Length: 105
Image: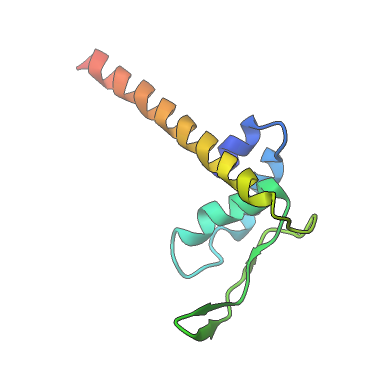
């Protein structure tokens, strides 16, 4: 959803979100973890991920995205706006599909 909502938001880069998502979406062991994180990193022009501690153990995880610019605290509400816009977009698509199914049934 981040890559699609970034395309709708003039302050974000939908093209970069799609490019980074295609490149980095499979870089984490979890099948879903890098999907949204890579699109968000691309949309915001930041690098996410990297080594992290889990239960006191350092895990060497891949970085997602390119550091087009430095991260800043304002990236949190920017990521939130991508999440909200993506959720609204997903809900609208679901409602249209549900309406089509109801009409055809």
